Image 1 (cartoon, rainbow, N blue to C red):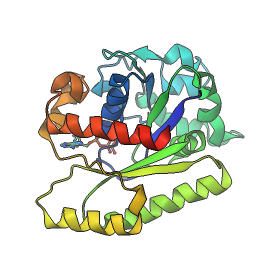
Image 2 (cartoon, rainbow, N blue to C red):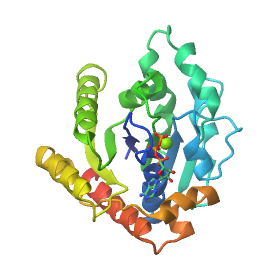
Image 3 (cartoon, rainbow, N blue to C red):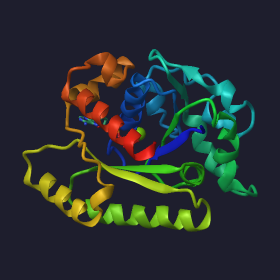
Image 4 (spheres, helix red, strand yellow):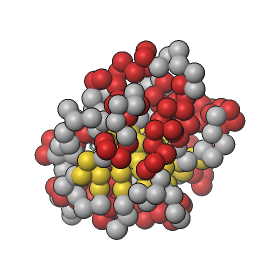
Length: 253
Ligand code: ATP
Ligand code: MG
C-alpha cells in the first residue's frame, strides 16, 4: 500500500500546524504505523521540535536534487517516526525555482520514491501560500486545516477552501480535505464555542470530533525536543492527539 500523504495547511501563523504534525505523527507511530514527517518551513520548527539535526541535508537538498529523499530521512527518538528536516536554506528556493518549468511538481517528483516505505507522510507547511506550499498541495492526498477558535476564523477558512479547490481543479485531482481541526480550544470562552458552532454548521462532517485543548504541556514539549507522549503522556494534550490519530485512521483507511 502506498503512503497516505497529509499536509497541515493554514496561511495564518501560529495556529498549531507544527505542534499537530509532531504529535499526530507520534501518535500514529505509537499505533504501529510507519511515519515520516517532512519540514517544508524554512523556520525549521518541526526539526527543532524533535531535536533533529537540521544542518544535515534536508528538504532544500532534495528539491535541488543534491540528495535523494531516502537519503535525507533521519530517525527520531521515537520508534517508527522519521523526519526530513528543513532550515533557512529553504527560504531561497522560492526564488531559485521560480522560472523553472514544472516548478509546481518538485515536491511530488522528489518524494515519489518514498511511497512504499511509510504508511503516513505528514508535511508541515509554512504560514504562507508560496511556491513550496503549492508544491505540497500538488503532492499531497489529504489536507488538514488546523484553526484557532477566534474572530474572523471563518473568513480565513473560506479562502483556504477556495485555494484547495482551485489546486484540485488544476493540478491535483486526488486532493481531499481530510478535516478541520480546532486547536488551542478553551471550553469556557463564549467566542470559542461560537466559532465551533459556526464552522460546524457550514462544514459539518469535515470537523474532527477531537478538539485539541489549550494545554501548556504541549507548548513545553518542543523545547525538550520531544513529542508530547515522551514528555507527559498523561496530559490532556497527549490524550487529544492520541484520539485524533484514531479519527484520522478511520477517515483514511
Ligand atoms: P507557524 O505558522 O509559525 O509555523 P504553527 O501554525 O506551526 O506556527 P505552532 O508552532 O504549532 O503553530 O504553535 C504556535 C505556538 O503555540 C507554539 O508556541 C506552540 O507551542 C503553541 N501551541 C500550539 N498548540 C498549543 C496548544 N494546544 N496548547 C498550548 N500551546 C500550544
Ligand atoms: Mg509551524
